[in-house]
Each structure stands twice: as structure tokens, then as C-alpha cells.
Image (cartoon, rainbow, N blue to C red; front, top):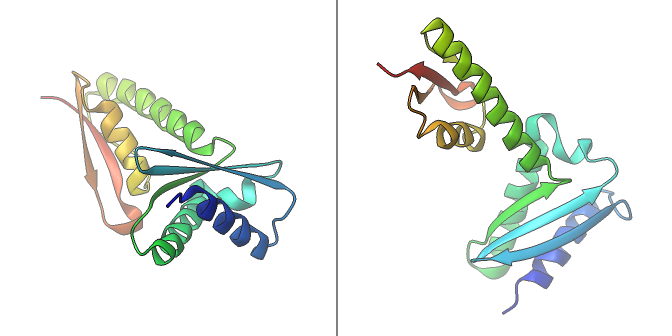
Amino acid sequence: MDKIPVILQTTKDFLAQLGFTKEITVDVKEEDDHYSITLKTDDPALLIGYHGNTLSGLQMFLGQHLHKQFDEWINITVDINDYRQRREQSLKTLADSTVEQVLGAKQAYILPPMTAAERRVIHMYLAEHPQVTTASSGEGRDRSVIISPKV
């Protein structure tokens, strides 16, 4: 069964129910059983939300709804106007500047609280760094990445 038309229509229907009709274009692509849902709009802020919280909620909602439709979990990613790519780049820039501070001061720095996906970007980006290590600390929404110099 080709899932792309169902994912496309489900996404469009959901956006229409939220009141977004003509302003958003939706595209769905599949690669290795992973479906990328790309939204394009002139005003993405409402759907992205603070630090991507609304976007993450939209992705979770669609994932659960598609699970019920297909009776299996569907691996999806929802992105709006390349927000996720831009956010990943800004997290890497933050990591680079923090590494400079850590190495200059020779002490650990705690980044602001982040989502699990954002923390993963930092951990993966710095995993092979020869001079620093990373760890997560805290609980729930207060969970942060700590960047420390290697001993």
C-alpha cells in the first residue's frame, strides 16, 4: 500500500481543520521507510511555536493519527520552511561557541534546557571532539547538556 497519498491527505485535512487552507503547501517524500512531511508557508511562526514546540506537537499528533490509520507506527518528520535544518545549524553554532568558552575557562558549561532531539544534535555533533565531552543533566523540561573539558 502506498502510504504517501494517505499521509498527504491526512496532513492537509488536519491543517484545514486548524484553519490553514490556502496558505500552506504540503509535500511528502519517503526514504527508507521514513516519511518527510514538508510544509511551506509565508507565515510559519504559528505552526512552529516557541523553540519548535508546536511543530513537535503537530508531528506527534500526525504520527499517532497515522498509527491508527495504518495499524502500525509510521516514522515521520514534519518540517516547516526548513526550520529543523536552521535550528540544527544554530545548535551547532551554540555548541561551537560553548566549546570555546569551556576550553578557555577550563570548566564545564551548562546549556539552556532543550528537547531530547535538540540535546541529541549537540551530543552527536560533539561526540568525536578531541577536547570536550558532553552529558545530560536534569529532569523533564529542565534537562540540559553539559559540555566539559576532557581530563
